[in-house]
Amino acid sequence: MRFLLPPSETKIRGGQGVILNLKSLSFAGLTAARAQILGALELLAVNPELAAKVLKIGPKNLHELVANEQLRTSATLPAIDRYDGTLFDALKGIEPAVAGGAIHPLSQLAQGRLAQHVFIQSALFGLVSAGDAIPAYRLSGTTSLPGAALKKMWPEAHEVVWRELGAGLIVDLRSKSYADLAPLPTDGSVDWVWIEVVHEGPDGVRKPMNHFNKKAKGVLVRAALQAKSMPKTLAALAEVARSVGLELEPPLHDRTAVLVTREQLAR
Image 1: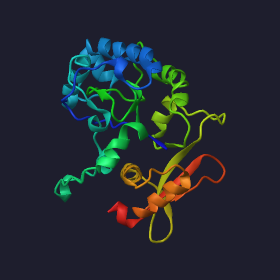
Image 2: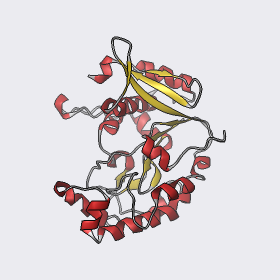
Image 3: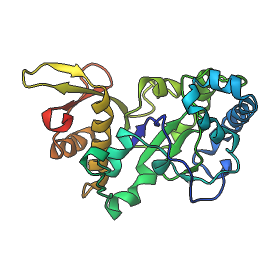
C-alpha cells in the first residue's frame, strides 16, 4: 500500500543534508520536467517584484523569495521533514503548541517504512518519496509559472510514475489541486482509491472537513505505518482506521472512499 499526500505551503527552513541533486530523487522519469520547472523558478527569482506577484507573496512574507534564489545551493532535508503543518504534524506525532509542543516520534518500524510507502506531490519536483532530499522552496500547484506550464507538464510526466510504483493499492490523500497535477489513470491499470474526509456530529449530520481534514489524513497514515503488519487492502486499512477513532467506508459507485471523523479527533 502506498499513500499519496499533498505538500504543505509552509516549509521547514534550513537543512542538514547535501545540496539538491535531481538525479538522486525518486522517479528518474521526472528529471527533465523537474529541471525545466526548477530553471523557470530560478529565472523568476531574478525579478523579485514579478516573483512576489506570480507566487502571491505579500509584503510581510517577501523573505520567502530567498528560498527560490538558493534552490541549488541550500541544504536539503528529507521531504517528510521539509513539509510543515497539520497533516505532517499529525503523521509525525507533533502536538500543537497549545498542548505543550509534545512530540511522539514514529516507531523505528514506521520510520523504516516511510520512504517505500509515503509519497508527496510537489509542484516543483513532482511526486517524491518521503525520504527524498529537497530544499525549501515557494511554489504552489495552482501557480501559473512563466516558462513552465505545471498543469500541462506534470500530468504527462507522471504517466510513467504510476507504473514505477508497482502493484498494490494506492491511497490518494492529495488535495484536489495536487491530484489534478498528476491524475491517477482511470483505465484500470492501477488500483487506487481517493479519500474524502467528513466530520460526523452527534446528530449524525456529516459535513466536509477543513483544518481537521488534514489532521485525519495524518493520523490515518501514521496508524498504518505503525501497524504490526502494513495494511495491503482497503478492508485492512479500515481496521487500522478504527483503532485510532476513524471510520473508513469503502467506495460505493466510484473510487471515493469516505473517512469519517467524530468528536474526539476534532477537539
